[in-house]
Image (cartoon, rainbow, N blue to C red; front, side, top):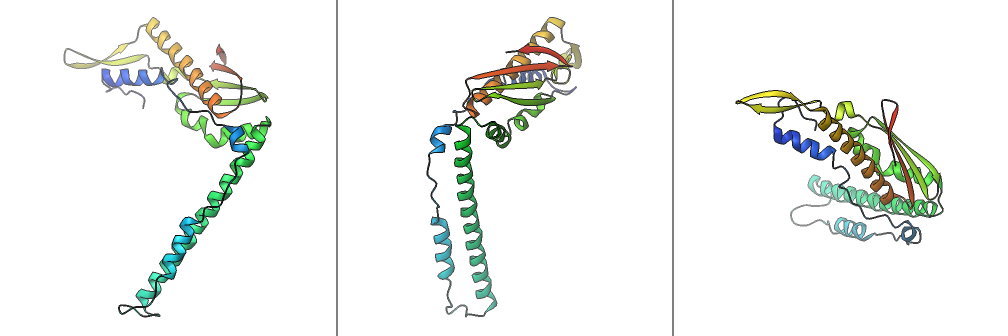
Amino acid sequence: SFPTRRSSDLQYNDYLDNVTKLYKFSYNPIDWQKLSVSKVEYDDSEEIAAEKQYNEIKPNIFMEEGDEIFEKRKHQAYQHFLDVKKQAQEKYQTQNEIVELAKMVVTGDSDSYYQVLSNDETAERLKEYFKDIEFCYIDRYTMAVCVNTDIDRIIPEVKVVKQNNKIIEKAIPTVEYNKISQDYVCSLAIRLAREMFSLLPIDKLVVDCVENDTLILSV
């Protein structure tokens, strides 16, 4: 979270360490080729177990068929069976959808690339570090990202320090402020690149960082 007027030096330093080291990120790249040829099998093991549990509920000396307790237990067990079955079907459907998506990704289909980015919610994860972001498909091997950075909001112009047992605000020297701002922008650009290369089978990526309608970095 962003430092407040009462943030300590330690909190402030931790905050800056976070926003200037966003690049510390590592995911294993998705193997879309392997996914595209994978075979999905319906897993009904839990469904079978739930059905067995339902069938094992029988009248005994403590409850008879038709009793409220007996009928309640039967109903709960049957509902559990239905829930488990529904979950198994949804999992099977999702896995098949992933395989179909993978088949499109390996062909370089642009819509599938955008779908991957949408499903992964890359922008949602990093939204606190920029104003807005736009992804652009160039070709099957190349993507572009345009991100509107937010230096004025992200990088504070003052920091809170303790001096003579008092909490005071101290202006950050211009050189230091510019260095922090540069580290934030570069860190964000590298993080976005790592995200993209881990998600999509691309070889090239263009990252444009814009601050107040001015291009400040293009890599």
